[in-house]
Length: 329
Image (cartoon, rainbow, N blue to C red):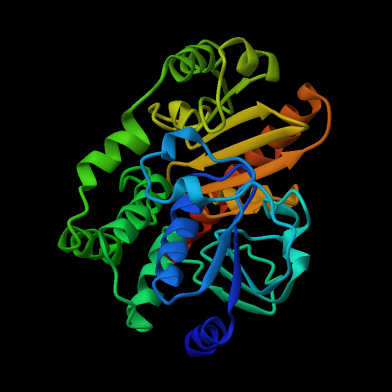
C-alpha cells in the first residue's frame, strides 16, 4: 500500500491537499509537512484550508494555503480526516480530483478515498506521515520538521495522552536532528495564550459541572461568548483539558456552539470515548474524540452525558468480570 500511494503521487502532476474542517495542529501540521515534501519533488501542489487558526502562523508556507480552489486535479490527498463529510472545503474541491488518497490515524475512519492508509493506533497523523516519508526515502528539513512536530505535540497534548509510545519519542528525537526547536513549538502551539483564550478559559472554568459522582466533567462556550471576547478560529482549542486535568474525572466534555454543537471528548484512562462518538456519527480515538450535533443545547448535553455514563458503566462491568476471572483462576 505504501509503495502504491507513493507511485500514485509520483504519477500525478497537480495535487490537492485537504484536511478536516476546523483544523487543529495535527491537521495543519500534516498538510504543511506534505505540502513542503511534495514541492521538493517539483509537484504542483495546492493546499486548501478554508480557515487557518492564527496560532499556527509560525509555520513556513502557511500563507501559501488557499481558502478554496476552482481547478481540477490529478490527485486529492486528505490527511487527518476520518469521514468525507468532515473534509474542510468550500467548493467541493474533493470532487475536482481524478483520484483520491486518505492518510489518517483515526480507528473510526470510513475509508472514503480510492486508496486509504490508516494507522489507527498511532498518536498523530504527523507521526504516520513521518514514517511514510522515511519509507519513501524523502529528504526532510527543518521546515518539514516544524510542521511534523506541531502535529505530534498538539495531538498528544505535549506527550501526555495515553496513546504516546516509544515511537513517538523516537520521532521527537529524530526531529532534533533536523534542528527543530521542540521547546519553542510547544510554547507557540500549546502554552502561548491571547486575551480571548484567557477569557474563554475563565468562562469554561466557571461553568464546569460534574456528573456520575465526579467521573464526568462538562463545560461549554456559546457563539455569543466567542463573539464577545473577539475569539479567532482555534481559540477554543485545549478547553476540554480543563476538566480532564481534575482528579477523579474519567471523561471531560467540552461543547462549543457553531452552526450546531461541536463536542470534544477526552478520556483520562480506561473509557473509550470513540465508542461514545460513534453513537452520534462522530469519531476519533480511545482517548480523544469529537461529535457534531444539530439540536437544542440541553437535549444535546443530556444525550451525550447519558451515553458517556453507559460507557463508564459498561467499562466498570467489564473490569469486574475480568477481576472475577482472575480470582477463579
